[in-house]
Length: 87
Image (cartoon, one colour):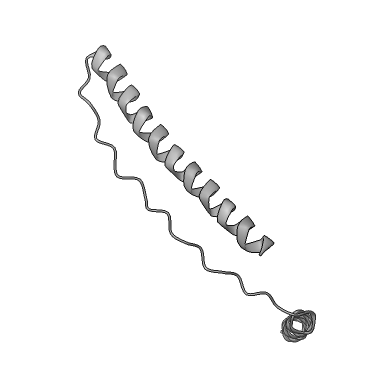
């Protein structure tokens, strides 16, 4: 239950931060165009900001999987070293 409440609050907090970023970008565009207009330049059309994509969840590996990957990499490095020494 505690984890659910933490995730709920965290997601709300992140949503509030993303909303604040959108508001600040709009304000910055307005200020930039205002300054350009004061200086006698035409306003600039800013490209739409990229949409926030949800990141894929990283796969957690067990220690025996990590060890197997390390051993496999070490074997490949050793075989490459032996092959380069023969040439």
